[in-house]
Length: 221
Image (tube, one colour):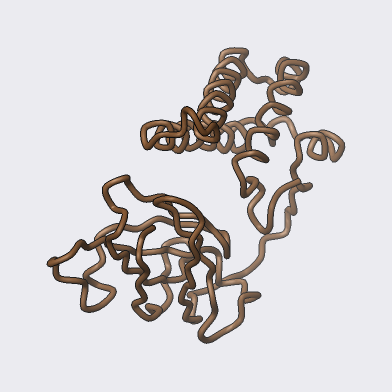
């Protein structure tokens, strides 16, 4: 089933399992749900690529920075494909409750939840996961995680090496990514090992942003 508030599973193993299940179901129901077979074939191709990439990234003999990067890229492409299929085809015509259950999805709620501008402030805690990987956990400094305005988290970051000037405040952070998960994983490049990553988080809701969280840092393993 879906993980947390977002329907897409958290781990790559579960993402792969869901994708394989979708391929089986869509091959049977594509015509009924007005989905072109080219869409199903594309999903199957991306699923096979993700399966092979994950196997290579997990194998001691083939686990290299290149294999890790390829795994990340193939799973990103798989996620984009699955999100597009769900958005474009799973509501026209409407699927039955049994269909949604078979796909590992929650039955859609047609009642919109009112929400406004986020006001809560959040930060993050980090933990070591593996080489070039940091686990992150969203922590609320103020406000409630159950507030309807808290739709997701924009995590800003920069990586600095020895002798480089670190960011003085969140406005100086250069990169960002959006997640709806309170726990996530950040993978860095091979050359980033030993450098320091700086982070700050803002809650986002349909383009509306909450206040900055404090600037924190962690050593990249």
